[in-house]
Amino acid sequence: MVDTPEDYRWSSYHHNALNKEDKLITEHELYKQISRIGSEGRKAYKELFTSPLQKTEIELISKSVEKDEVLGKDRFHVRIETETGFKTRRGKHGGDRKSEIYRKLEYQQR
Image (cartoon, rainbow, N blue to C red; front, side):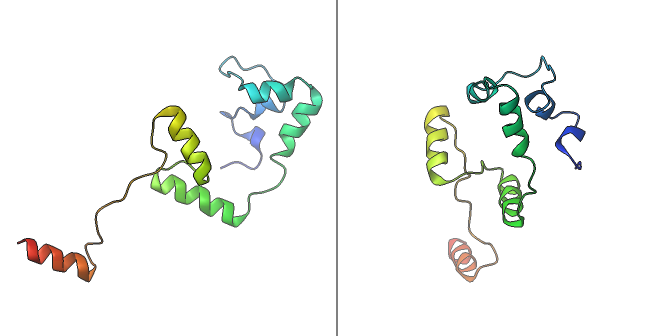
């Protein structure tokens, strides 16, 4: 997409790392705690973006996007679902229509 976070026009990086005012941003409480330490907080935030993502991380992100699911471990899913009342993972879908078992069941129902 872009080479560096500051190259992305719509990123909150400008506000969080570079201390540029952005009236569209409502800071999260955790970020406010980090930002209380001023330039050290911004430096810590910038360091989150210094290492490229590993191939396995990119694959996990891609799979979650393809499935339209939230990326996270089971504990995270439970917490978010409990707090919001929304499902963070898709439910089970119908069978594989090419499988022998599915074709047998379909034939029996006719």
